[in-house]
Image 1 (cartoon, helix red, strand yellow):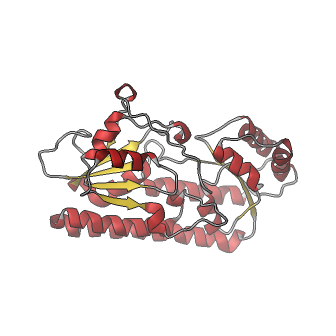
Image 2 (cartoon, one colour):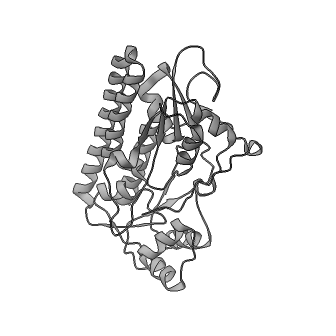
Image 3 (cartoon, helix red, strand yellow):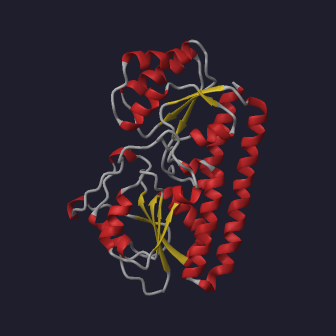
Length: 302
């Protein structure tokens, strides 16, 4: 589904944000070691970049606070500076992180390589709607890893073999995650699931689960608009009628309607699987996604 412009931009020094660098070197400052600079819109892509690049590259994530609500995120003048000095930019695309395009235009650095992960995925809107949370789709992440490896190798040919080796190890772990999804699909295909937002929907679909949530509910939550009483009631009945095996609940955005849904699931004894849009503290991408798949497996087995 098409997300509203959820990451607003405030290019003022007063809104200065402490950027998180995954490797040595301060954000937005000139390095004297010749390292390639990579700037990612979120720590999800920043972590993947660091996994593939290792210490040969300086990686900065614009949005990195796991407690930050992505819907109210504000970029800063410091973000603009970091992007202006980047060699490779990673953006999700699909309307998720439009602030990156605005910052990129302000940077006026035409030599940068831009990796738009939604474009790389090849996914297109269906009936005008696109689920832009493509980092929950492992085939897409594998494609992105390949494109990133090529971009890194072009930027620093001397490290090409390192990048390729790291990327191969990373994609092997993605293959293992896809195998776990496939195993679950063989057991649970066709079971119902509910969501508050389509954040984990690609993963649920890969496991063969059917999203039973009224489309008007998840769309309203994602767009930040009111849910009608009738649609809310339909959603609550998914749990009281035991139509679904689990609720995938976005922990980073909540409100009165989602809290009612959460309470209804708990009251009905329907397992709740918490999900997030950005990388939780202390996790890498592979560990995070393994935990998500395992949590869904546990919920389905209850």
